[in-house]
Length: 529
Image 1 (tube, rainbow, N blue to C red):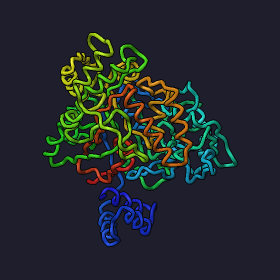
Image 2: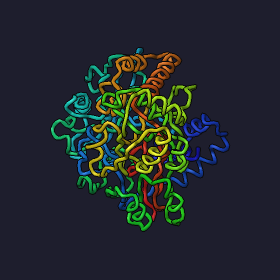
Image 3: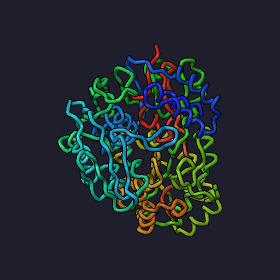
Image 4: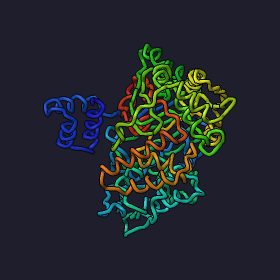
């Protein structure tokens, strides 16, 4: 709750929200007016940003194969980099997940939510000095609808059948109504680029708070302040440096010695050690992120649902949360939605570790021999240990899981979404529709379990246009059950995002949208000397 009131107070200081709106939103969370007033005064004083300095972040997730094209962004490193130099049409509010204006300053749906009109912000300049136009917006969105672009947002964009201008307004016509459309446009791949990126998708020219000074895939990226930034509530430091640090020990050492101000992917096992350092602060955020073991449903032997069920029942989720997450997370249930999502499907029985059921389904599958699981330290914090732990729990069901540790460099291009059984992670998405459309729709590029079900696709598309929330919730429940009982994802845990910074870093915003303040960490924080 303190995070939320601090965030609201900061918006007041930056001219984004008046005191009355702050009090109203605080009251909506059950805070008394007197308490809200005190919180406002205290938080406002504490959160006044300071400008200047050079911010250094040591980040896991970089690879030599990282692309400069935001459409192809795969890693944690490029996720943060894209937030530094680019903007989307819409952003999400950190504590509630609702849509808030960005390059689109307002929007209006038709009565059936099948046609949306967006007012594009005027007076915004790209880093090359060119002024943002409606044509740049249209061409950006059109590029992400082209399969040749290999965009991670392709699954989302396929629901848009027409992208056009009405004067200086953007009009999106959908294949069916979708009340969630503004949130879908928050997808981090949809960075608005000059001429849509058609001239050079790798130019890394956007409208964000920082300009790209250098970008060396797998090594580092540097940024300098954009003096023409259209916003005053971000980009507080003079320059940013993202340093690739895929080794967890190296990240911790760099933070502890003050070589960097911030690191991501803190292994929960090291939290107590880091807490002892007087200069370090742990930044722990609950959200929609989840760690997964993914099987390709269309590849032997995982094309057998009994084998998939056997492997799901062989997962000791409670032990996984305690030993791998150190309690920083919650047990998962083999579908990618938790209570933070609107219309969460309640009442689904929690799948528990059951060696007897695992053995039953394993025998029924007819499979004989080992099951090869590929993993890496970069898949998620503790992924190798989690794989070994899983190997031990599966052994009690008579299932022999062979764990193969893969190198971190190239894991996201050579193993994930390529090999039939591997470990991975998802940061979650703003809506259930987007999560399913990105990773479970048959036509989605990132359908990493090869869950190819026309009946699932049909329900997903119907739910998207269903305005009756009770009916829509029931559809989401049906979809969750299909993924849980017939899909290729083993989802043992929803992870908290555990990162750390020096105490010199101020203004960190805990954001349920995704890790590292939804990727905005470098644009939101400032440094105190």
